[in-house]
Amino acid sequence: MVLLDFFLSHKKNTASIAKERLQIIVAERRKDNSQPHYLTQLKRDILEVICKYVKIDPDMVTVQLDQKGDDIFILELNVILPETEDIIIK
Image (cartoon, rainbow, N blue to C red):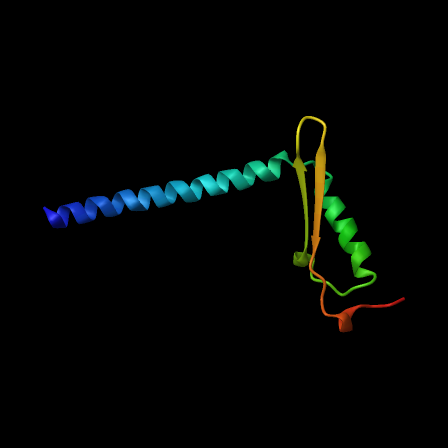
């Protein structure tokens, strides 16, 4: 019976792991769908302006919009800047 319990419990663990992964995927898609359509273009524009002064990888810029209440929105911008040697001064 111990051998049978081992195989049955393993399937339950696999199912619960799959369920958790699916929940994460669904949450990420909902997050993407709930954001305004202009957010992607806003990130591109911000990246373009930053690239005028600093050589930067597009993955080093994140833009996130959070809603706090009915009429309060918070725009969060995170930029990881490179070392000072890579900064372009015009």
